[in-house]
Amino acid sequence: MPSDKSVVITPGGLLRHWQGHRALTRRVIQAFPDDALFQFSIGGMRPFAELASEMIRLAEAGMSGLTTGNWDVEVPAGDSRSELLELWDHTTDTINRTWPELPPDCFQKTHLAFGQWETSGQNHVFYWIDNEVHHRGQGYVYLRALGIEPPPFYERG
Image 1 (cartoon, rainbow, N blue to C red):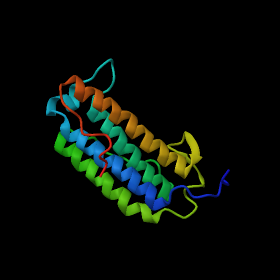
Image 2 (cartoon, helix red, strand yellow; image 1 turned 30 degrees about the vertical axis):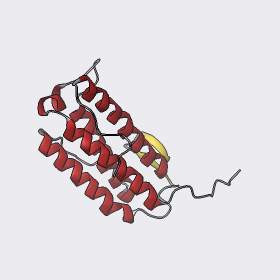
Image 3 (cartoon, rainbow, N blue to C red; image 1 turned 90 degrees about the horizontal axis):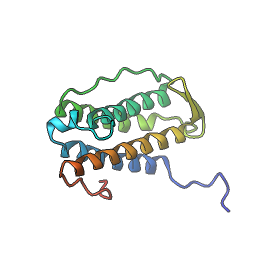
């Protein structure tokens, strides 16, 4: 059995993995009709625009928290598809710009995120990715219910 010190993925590999998911989620946002993006829901779930806004807030504030310790970052919500995509792209740029600023011990160090979740930096990033995949799955259900074929889940580039 490998030791706990074995490296399974490098920080650069983790960033590429996350950004691959973000590229796919962006295509899901684009696939929605304008009205459905902000209004359509099934079974009491939130519309996809709200889910995408949550992903944006987690990533923006999360990267701030990991790099500076400030988890209280105000992130606006987009009121149209173009605003939502603009915010999404801004967040992608923020992640790419601040990722190299992460201290070497950031991924193993314990962080108290948003005043309530205490775990390692890598576990926070894993959560943000898991949260995105979960909500993107909801978006796939919505798109299929609307008669729209979602982007292939395996095309993350």
